[in-house]
Image (cartoon, rainbow, N blue to C red; front, side):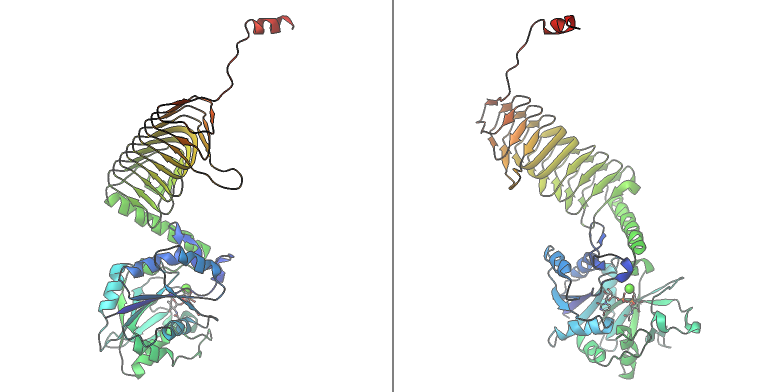
Length: 441
Ligand code: UD1
Ligand code: CA
């Protein structure tokens, strides 16, 4: 059966006490909402809807930067989860498949759990909530089951009677069901509750009065952790990193100091990679087998070819592809640059907007001056070349194969293949100068 997913993400998340919408806060290097959105794409829905409020320009911009482009549903006023789902269903135009509802602030739900939830739906049991058992149920809604283990009703935290507080079966918020039935039920919701909101959870009780069964699928409590405060976010980051480190080590990556290695959700590292302590992987990093990342390096949006060595203290920035057997040493910053195999940039360099060939050596202190204060310009360096220490390359400039630059040169003209470029003031020696100087004392 066709599945449509709905990500609920409207509202400011005031408890974050931040100017940024809650779901744009970063977790594992990517926006919070991206976690449940990307997991939901693994079940291959035919359509995805993203519920947000109307002033969230920043969210719209962020959504455009990713490969999944959900249909945006604007919920003008946040009248509750039931209302949010109704806004999405109103856009679905008679869709009669399954609808899977997820939250933008609940990042850890697993694909396997969603598969189980979906496969529990039958004609007789057309709606299923994802629940979990908790020792400390806090602010979660609680589920009351009937004698057949179907949900009799879900009681929101604010509406709990004292005797109901020790119910340990909680509502994760995630729910799946037949779109036509949910559509019919959300139309009947009211706001007669402690929050004065349309509670999606009330569809459980409404379903019973129409002779449907709402069931519950159980998952681990950790999968349902929601982020409401900065402290929750920090805690979620810790859980995310712990999980990612474990996954990396299981895949044959050596982490010398796992607790000091930070990954992003999309970090790809092949086996036989050795990672020294204190490394940060921002989004979009792909590292091939046999690489060593030395301490205190920061990488984002880059690929590193097999058997290369990066760092210590290297910064590899966006749109950089480094080939095999390269060496990028300490205090080297590289941005928007393609580097072919066997090339070395061992010390103290800035390389921006460049193409560099294979087996080339970029000497200590080389700077690519890519920015003239208005525009960025690109330079190229060919294969088997030797850029002398402290060379200044004023972009745009093309340097051929088998070339050299003399140390300390300022290069602003092409250097053809097989040529040495030298541009510096000729040295003059003044014989006896130091002696005459000391005689004057
Ligand atoms: C909700 C559930 C509760 C469950 C808990 C799990 C309801 C009524 N309650 O409570 O049973 O235990 O989640 O975390 O469903 N949202 C909108 N529009 C709205 C209101 C909310 O898009 O008008 C979105 C929020 O962005 C958020 C999600 O829905 O991602 C949940 O809303 P929230 O207000 O945090 O619900 P809880 O009170 O936590
Ligand atoms: Ca919540």
